[in-house]
Length: 295
Image 1 (spheres, helix red, strand yellow):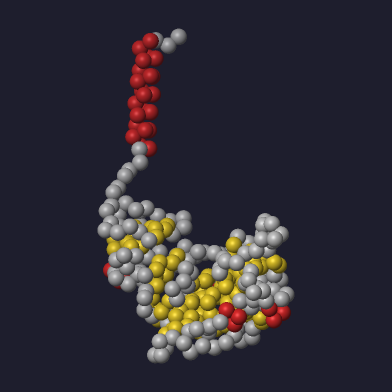
Image 2 (cartoon, one colour; image 1 turned 45 degrees about the vertical axis):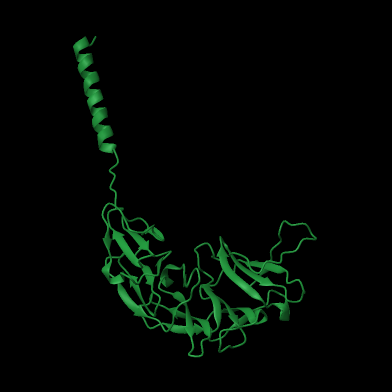
C-alpha cells in the first residue's frame, strides 16, 4: 500500500503537469488595428498566408503567420479595387484596378506582377471566370468595359491560357456574361472545352441593346464557331437576363417575350447542351414577373 506522502506527491505532480498543459494550450492573441474595415479577408487554402483587402484605401495587407503580423503591399497601394483569389490554385490571386493595368501573384502574395488588358474591368460581381480542370487552371475569362469616344460603353470578354502571363485574346464582343462550363469540379458532365456566353446578336455603338437581342451562345473552340442555345423554344429563346453556376447545375434566366406580361423562366443544365425548364413550387395560376433572378 502506497505511503500517504507518496500519494500526495503524485497528486501535486499531476496538478503541476495539468497546469503546464493548460498554459501550453492557451491561445495567443495579437491585436492589429486597421484604418478601414476589410472588403475581403481570405486565407490561401492550407497555408498560414492571409490577404486583407481595404477597398476604401484601395490597398492590400498580407500576413504569413495567420494574422499575427501584417504588412501593406506597397505595389498595390491606392490601386486595389478588387481582390480575387483563384478558386482552385492556392498559389494565385488577382488584383483588379479601375484602369487597364492589373496585378497577379503566383506565390501567395510574396511578389506581384502587372499585366495589361485592352479594357478596364466590367463593374459586375465576377469579372473573372476560372476553369476547374487542373491542367487548365491558367485558363481564365476576363470581362471588360470599353467606352468609345461617343460616350457609349459595351462589355467584351477576353481569355488567357496562362493566368495573364501571356497576351490575352478577345473571345467575344457585346457580352454580359461568359463562363467555362467546367467552372467547378462538380460539373463533370460538361465538356472541358465548353464556354457559355450571354451576348447580344445586334451590335451597338452606344452600348444600348434591346432585351430581345440577348441570347445564350456556346462554343468549344473559343468562338471560332458558335451555337445558339434556344432552350427548345426556337426563335423565342431570347431575352436572357442571367447565367450562373448553382451547385452542380448551370442556370439561365430569361423573359418570355412571347407574353405581354413578360413572365420569367428559369432553365437548368448539367452539361451546357441539354436544358430543362425549372418548375417552381407556386400555384399553377401564379406567374413570375421580376426583371431578373439573382444567380
